[in-house]
Length: 635
Image (cartoon, rainbow, N blue to C red; front, side, top):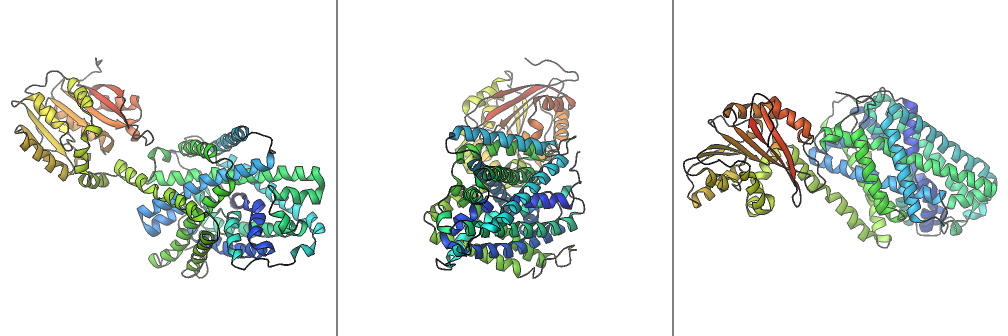
């Protein structure tokens, strides 16, 4: 199996973190923040730098402790367990997807004047996403070179603004310094937080970094200090060149500042640099986020196919493709909504960062003797204090920003939408969860059986084999008996049916239905290990039916070989599986490829035909055939 390639060094991690931190807040944050706190926005910048250096150190400790591809997801898994680590990973992924849109929307605001249509801008944005994801697919070395290029552009850009701009600063612009109550500094801080975020992106690349325990903590702190100093410098120049009262009303404030410093031609050149810096920040997210999906997929907490690593490129190519599709969808939906998207991004980011910060404290108590190559000072108390500050920033925003509560409800809905996703994934991939859910929802399955397995589909299943009378049949996965009663009628009282299921509540309902209908030729077997075997009490049979069990079979070859032994030569099988579930949940990997699926059955001694038939909320995959020594065509 291909693995991720450990080639990244200190310079690349600094470059990645710098590009991540040079977000829209570096260019828009001062103007938005000044609209709340005036010149005191500089205090918000200073607070931001102090807080973020400490947060960078917290990330450094966690990466040194768990230098794996999942980053924040991996930290959360160790601190909180499976469910909450999924939610935090989910929030991080949603946040990253929104962030890419925010960055690209901001970049195009600078690049393209108002005369261009929104459709043209969306087309350009999609093109950028495709190019950046292709770079990500090409390999970690290509990605490192691109990140280094964008990091150099970002640093040169800010130096080019700060040094010449110092000669145009008018100190009178800073009077009065306080024009609003001090509390509004924290509202300003809310809209500026995006400016110095991005440590998680470096954490996702820990598995591809040389000596990550030492490299990443140092790189995170240094890059945070560099980005913070550049941000404060650019903010001071902006306020010194253009009074904050004028700055807050500008669509692209840095453009106006650089026009004063360099004139229109110089401003256009700087504008191109800003666009490149914002695209570089988006590139950092696009390059790193597939590693989060990879880690979650490895643990069956996301689509399992996304754990695949390309044999030659050594990149998570399926996760990259998935990310590309999602990013394009968000671009189309959210284009032109910069402040709304930013207001959604920041609370999501703060929720994620609070979870990560508190994991430092939790793990100090949970793993007191673990080797920590890097330790943040005050690791038990400091993260709690920063988390309280973050919570305070959210609360201040909620009460002082009009419409914040409505937006926060949408944010919470995005978070809680992850819960049914988690349950679906558990139901789909986890045998123990399958049994628990089947027990819990047995009654619901019974009530909804006409939706889950419509009568028309049942007729199609029974109709595959015309001569069922007096036959011995195994129904592998009988559920609540939706198909069992039809099979019992088809084989008649002289036939025999073995109906097995892993859910004891399903079995109880099935027995009640058989008694109610006076059916006595069905042997009902509760088999809690059904996902790994055929129950040993099942005797030889003529035909095997199974509905909805293929994706749960853990040891497929073993189960098929046991079925092979139960059947006579030319004995028949019929598997029906739910596929394309709700049109977005992918199938279990081993049944997603028809040729591979056919080979699995052939290797077990069956010749089968595979058909897909349409349903309402999902499709039905029919795999039916006979036991045969040689491959024979199925009609």
